[in-house]
Length: 149
Image (tube, rainbow, N blue to C red; front, side):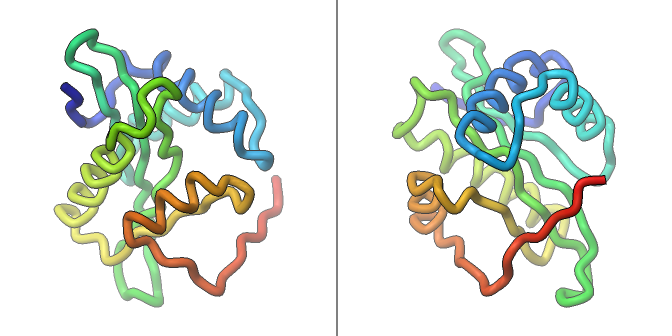
C-alpha cells in the first residue's frame, strides 16, 4: 500500500535518488547531490512551500515525490504554487502513484488557498507531458526564459 505524506529530513537520501532520476531525463538540469541536498534542506525549512512523498508501506521506502512553492501572482491577485520535482521511482511507475502524490499536493494547495498551480515540464519528456494531460493540466502560450546568476 502506498501513502502520501509531508516529507521530513529523514527522507533526504531517498529524495536525492529520485531527483537524480528526474535530472537524468531533463536536459536543463545537472545531477549535483550537494546542490540538490541544499535545495531540499532549504525547502524543508521554508514556510513558503512543502515537499510531499509517497511511501511504500510494505517496505517503508520513499518511492515518489513532488514539491510546491508559494508565489504571489498579480494576475491572480493572490498566492499561487509552483509545482516541481514530480518523480516516481522507475520500478513503481504506471501504478497510479504519480497521480496519488500529485493529488496530495493539489489538496494541500487548496487547503492553503492557492489560486493556481503551475509547473515546468521538459518539452522532450513525452511520457510526462502525456501524464499531465491525463491529469487535466493545460498548456499555456507562455515560454520559460532564465538567466543563471
